[in-house]
Every structure is written in C-alpha cells, then in structure tokens.
Length: 444
Ligand code: NAD
Image 1 (cartoon, rainbow, N blue to C red):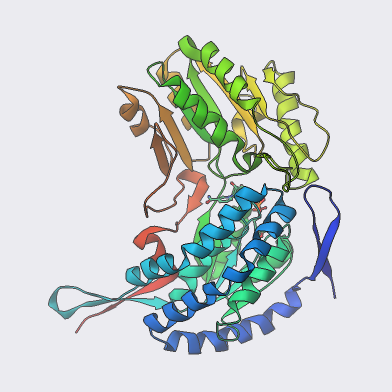
Image 2: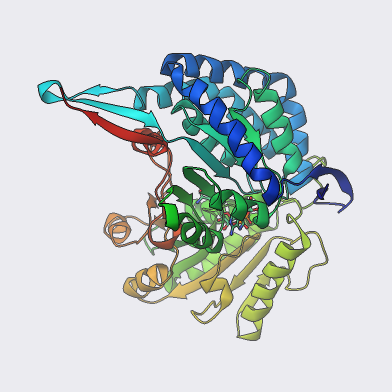
C-alpha cells in the first residue's frame, strides 16, 4: 500500500505515515459515498444540522491535540494554531445555524417555491496553510446541503485531517464524510471521478487544472485561489496604523496567508518614515519553533516553499531592490522578518505570490501609478488602501473581490471572494452557502 509521510515543519523529522488513496481505490469510495448520500439527503435539514453540530462537539476534547498537530505539520506557532482550532470548534454551532438558514426553502410569489437541494458527492480539496479552517469552510456547507463529502486534505497536513474527520465520524452516519489522502495525483483522480462538485481552496495553477478536469461533465465548482494582495498607503494615511497593518499582514502565518499583504505602494513623500517604522516594528518579531514562548513567525512549511521565497528575494536584489532588514540567503527552515524596498514591476516579488514573511515596498509619485500597479496582476483576491480623504475613491478603482479601507479585508458574514484569477465561485454568506446546493424551482 503506498503511503505518504507527514513531516514536522521545523525539524523535518517524520511524524507518521498515512495510506494514500490511489486512483484504483476511488470508485469504491464513490460507491460508499453515493449510498450514504441517499440516506443523508433523506434527513431533514434540521436533522442534518443537529447531527453536524453534535459531530463538531466531538472536536472539543481533541482541540489541543488538533492545535499541536497544526503547529507541527505546517509550522505555525501554538497560539495561532490554538486560535485556528478553537475558532473552528467554538463557531461550529453558529456556522451550522447560519448555513441552515441560507438553505431553507423560500416561498416566492404565486405559490412558487425555491429549494436548495443536494448536488450529490462533493470533493473538498484543501490546502495546508490553515489546514483545519480551510477544510471546515467548505465541508460544513457541503454536508448541510445534503451532500456526502470526500475530503482530500493537503499532503503536508494529513494528521490534522485524520483527527478532524475521525472525530466527526463518531457521530456522522457512515460514508457521509470520507478521507482520500495523497498529493495532486489523488486530487486529480478524485476530480475526474463520479463526483458532482469540487470545492477547492489552493493555488491558482491547481485551480485551472481542476477547472479543465471538471469541464467534461460540467461539475460544479467553488474555487478560492491564491492572491498577491496590494496595499496602497496614501500621503494622508495614519502612518502608524498603516505600518502596523503592513507588518502584521505580511508576517501573519509566516506570510503564508492567501490575503497577506504582498506588495506595498507608499507615497514617496512619506516613504522614508514608513520604511523606518516598518523596519523598527519588524525587528520585534520573534522567529522560532512553534512551542517556544513569544514566537510569532514559525518555519516555512517545507524546503520547496523556503526556496521559492529566497529565489524571489534574490531576483529582487539582483534587479536593484534594497534590503532594509534581513537577507536573501536564510538557512532552512526559517525566513527572518524581511523588509525590501525599490520593488519594480519586472521583479518576481511584484508578479508572484510570495508566501513568506516579507514586506515588499515600492514608493510611488502619483496615485494613478500605484493603482495601475496594484491592478496589474492576474490575481484579485484582496486589496487594501490606507488614507484620509480620497481613500474611498482609490478603493473603488481596485480590482479585487475584497477591499479594505484603513483595515484588512472581509468581516461580518460577507462572502470570502476573489476577483479575476483568484477565484471562481465563493463561499461564506447566504449566497456562498447556496453554491453547495442545486437550486430547484417548484411552480404550483
Ligand atoms: P495547492 O494548490 O498546491 O494544493 C491545494 C490542494 O490541492 C492540496 O490538497 C493538493 O494536493 C491539491 N492539488 C494540487 N494540484 C491539484 C490538481 N491539479 N488537481 C486536484 N488537486 C490538486 O496549494 P497549497 O500550496 O496547498 O496552498 C497554498 C495556496 O492556497 C496559495 O496559493 C494560497 O493563496 C491558496 N489559498 C487560498 C485561499 C483563499 O481563500 N482564496 C485560502 C488559503 C489558501
């Protein structure tokens, strides 16, 4: 039986191995999933909500174990991992209720009824950077809509997925939620199999491949993809607030966050002060292993990601960017807090998603130049502008699914949504929850 190994992101020691689900095993998985789905869909929405809520209560006793596994497998510090595990578990009942409300049938005029029916089998394919939260965002609406789910977690974080799914399955009827371990090959085989929907969070390139493989049978898609989020700092901005945000957002989860600030365009009149303050704040960040107190930047998830960040930094310095803090040659597994200025459009730091703890600064002379560069990207997940008067007008011109004005993106129960090639479909909000269902109109 082929296996994959889970590694400790800090030490690179093997933690455990799990069995890979091969392409040959997928038809049997689908068979079980289909049988279970028929029974699951026959329950009322309220019964499904009750069972899902009870199932999530089974995560409470393992919350700390989940947090430790998140830290070990992907490297984030224990405080953040606890926040991820605790947030997922504590908000589960509320989330289930919100989804159930969105999926309740609606009566329209003239006796017409709008129903939200199951699609069938949903493949949830999730990334490693928030291994529990990202899987949960897709899995819960898929289940409540009456679908059965096959979760294909990231090959970097299989142990988090094992504990998550095994705990839920103490309550959920057999076959309603199954796991398929493996890398891209397992993911591709699942997408090509007899499923009805792919709910995916991951990179833009994988999203494109999934879309192509889902096309022959027009399988439904929700895809939350990568980002290369810009931040514009106007001369009228509260500089200290902008500095706080830029550093916190660029360094969150060691920069491995889809909406981390990847490019900062700062008005040249305040650029020196901004850079000076960013460096001072960045110096305060502590890098280290997840279980050390005061650490707020852990290791990068794996050597490939570490190398990718270094290559982008080396490309930038070779093309004339100046390092204000840090270097472009860190030994594995850490990238120290890095601040670099003088970024130009030809640099990979500008063009690509970096996914490392790097504040990349470009001073600008005209606001139009900042807006053009912010928008000159195939990505369009989030964007942020800090400024006084005129900030709203700048925000209006930014091509992103989510825009923050003097704050980060998202909030409330708004959709989590990408524009351009950062997404296709979305989750979150009533409109997002309904994407996991087939809309059916009954006219009487
Ligand atoms: P990834 O695309 O490499 O992998 C994500 C998942 O897809 C994994 O389970 C992987 O095995 C699987 N996969 C990869 N290629 C596939 C294919 N061709 N067919 C089917 N499955 C495939 O992404 P990652 O490195 O795990 O995660 C980081 C990426 O996720 C970043 O780009 C980040 O911005 C993005 N992300 C986006 C959001 C969002 O909400 N928009 C949230 C978190 C992460």
